[in-house]
Each structure stands twice: as C-alpha cells, then as structure tokens.
Image (tube, rainbow, N blue to C red; front, side):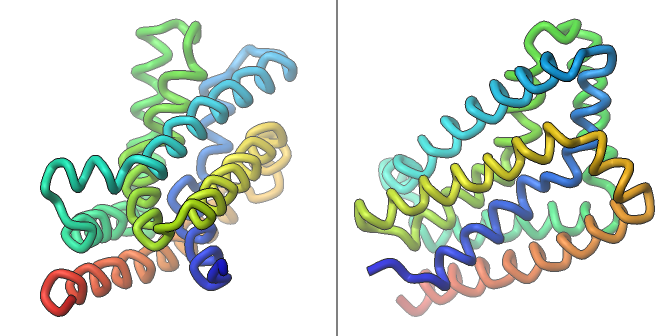
Length: 209
C-alpha cells in the first residue's frame, strides 16, 4: 500500500528542487525572439528529456549506488547536504544568478539551436539537485508499485513545470521582482528543512540501522 506522506514528501522535494517559478523568467531569457509556438515546442522537448533523465535515475539510481558500494544512508547524507546548499542559494538569491550565467553561456555557444537539451533539460531542470533528490526519494520507494508511483510523481512535477513555462510571461508579470524573491526564499526554507531531514535519516541509517 502506498504511503501518502512519502508521496507528498516526494512531490514537495522535487517541486522545490526543480523550482518552476524560478525557471520561468530564465526560460523567457533563453527564448528571446521566439514565437509562442516555438517556446511551447522548446518547453515540451526540454521537459520530456528532463523527465526521461529523472525517471532513469529513479529506477536505477539505487542499483548504481549499490554497484559502487555506496549505501543509501551515505547518499542521503551527501544528497541532503547538496540540497541544503541549493536551499542556501535560494534563500540568499544566489541560485538564479548561477542559472542565468549558465543560460547566457549556452546562448552564445549553441545559438539557441539546442536550447531544449542544453541548458533547459540539463542542467536547469534535471540538474544535480533534482537528480540527487530523485535518487534520495527512490530509496523510500522499494517495491515495483511504489517505483511506479514515484515515476508518476516525477511526471506530475514535470507537467507542472511545463505549464509554468508555457505561461511564463504571465507568471513573471504576476509575481514581479518582489514576488519572485519572496517565493524563492519561502521555497528555500522548505527545501532546507527537507534537506536536514534527509541528513538525519541518513545518519540514522548509517550509524543505527
């Protein structure tokens, strides 16, 4: 039977890590000069690629760790610390600056030809934080049914992200600079709390379990 609390925790962790409201203005910057259908096509392709990447890690992440001799507990500690750093960046408004720099480099190098793949899918959507969060949450979904539910959670989060990218102009106008700053900090605090919980669970698993 599926644990509703674990599902809610997984949705919250992935949504906060992917950060749809934070990506919306960056997506607008990446697609300057494009028509609305072109933007929709870029958003759809980027989201599909990111979903495939996260789904693969959700299904095989624990197996890869086992092959490397890394316990889930140890990865929870490392992943929790990484997520905490992302939360720190969000709270002090450093994450968007880093993402904007990444997007600017990509525009000059690839001339917008492969924006959906780089940098939209990688590393803006399915970046180290999202991949770590996916592997971390997959440790709480051991059975085939639960893994299927986790894939559904990833699909839901990516679908929400896609919708936010499609209506990015409206979101940006609605939130404004102050609204984006408040929302990003609030999401950062939530992610920090989740990251601490991952570390606590990892320490218990390594030293007690």
